[in-house]
Image (cartoon, rainbow, N blue to C red; front, side, top):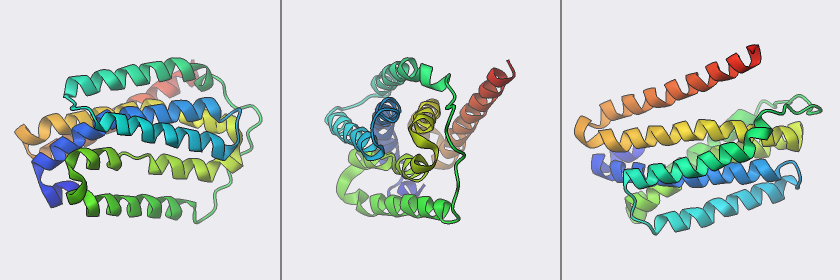
Length: 216
């Protein structure tokens, strides 16, 4: 929304496509962290995942993407991720202690995300739409969540968190794709509303599927 207010529909459409392609890097981030969380230290697993995101994003930035190419990339990465982390999702952490939340956990996460968004919007005229789109989907929210909960729930539960988040992030990518495709023909407001509905319906479908699995 801030990018649309500052730059207009054309800039946002290009940024959304770049973000959609870079959403595959976020998927790789979750896959790597989900695999490493159980067997390595907290900072080693997170650092490796962040490094993978950065390397992948640099490679993505060098490609001129079409919606179809970006869709294939996302489906390939997330499809592999679902296969790799499927065992993790179906294994509940047996000995994970209950998470103990402190009053400042949510404000710290919100402040980190807000500061990062402000920084990206501020330097977006320098970065251009392509790099801005990639920077906009840097997984700052996931990183801050992992940093907060890992010491309390342990590696196994953190691995499960990453596995579950992987399915949600594919829906986030579909939201970005809808935004890119609709903003020029339908206008900014309508495109945002439809994109929001795509994200909401995806999340609702995941929750319904999870409930059916537990009842089954």
